[in-house]
Image 1 (cartoon, rainbow, N blue to C red):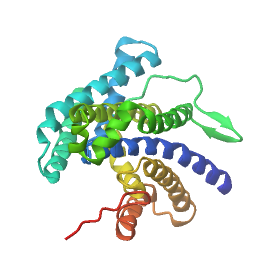
Image 2: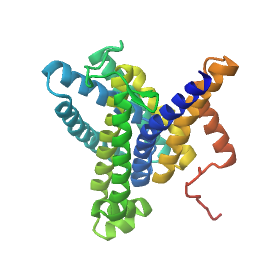
Image 3: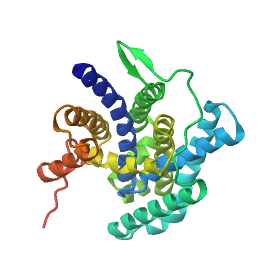
Image 4: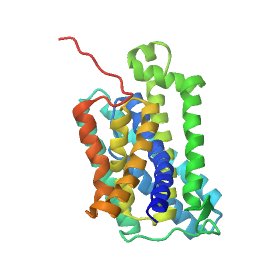
Amino acid sequence: MGMDLFFQLLINGIIVGTLYGVVAMCFVLIYKSTQVVNFAQGEFLLIGAWICWYILVQFQIPFVFGFLITLVFMAGLGIFIQMVVLRPMIGEPIISVIMVTIGLSIFMRALVNWLFGQNAVGFPEVFSTSSINIGGLYVQPAYLMSFVISIVIMAGFFYFFKYSRYGLAMRATAFNQQVAQSLGISVKQVFAMAWAISAMVSALAGVVVGMVNGVSSALSFIGIKVFPAVILGGLDSIIGAVVGGLIVGVLENMAEYVDGQFLYWGNMLTIAPFWVLIIILVIKPYGLFGTKDIERV
């Protein structure tokens, strides 16, 4: 039974880790484009899950259409927040912008709690079966769906930054905003695009977790849980975000296995990623793939 549980948690860790990697890429996307760490990322998950739940329950439409409407709504929300809240902060000290994102996260969470309440609600049934047997291991369909979509999104991010016109513009803006403007790139459009993509992808993660665990304000905590993965991989590395997400996802589940089989502490699942965060900041502050800044004094 112990080894069966071990492999079950390992597979779950890999699947959840890909989801963490996708959310971590959203952190990196905004940071690379705007040099801002968005501490409201978890609230994007929360809002996306609640909006999708509301559309499915209120209008009784198929999940696919409700999901697509949610993504469009979240893209608009991301652009709106960037234009109204973040754009006036261009040129201000970084700490001021970070405090704005923290205040934004508190405001959005309070607004969602006021609109939808704080009690967890179950997501409408999307799949006809509760779990799928793969080689003797049972995996929930929502996680399988998220795994496939996460791989597609990762491939899409790679193509986007490597070959697309807007991806190259985003990379140029991240390298030097003034040089990008001199080349005819609209920095404002790049910023808006980064926030729109980040909001959409985060909503996807929120919907998946909501289908498995229900929709509640606890979803916003995932943004904080993913932050160690971002630091582990490197705050400005897309590849690092993916690797960091996989490591944290597997580490969480392995910590749960060790705790349940040997330690019996009861909270290893929650604290393990943050121990990794502390260790990485002490040993390798720029992460596994992050760019080390060298300042001349």
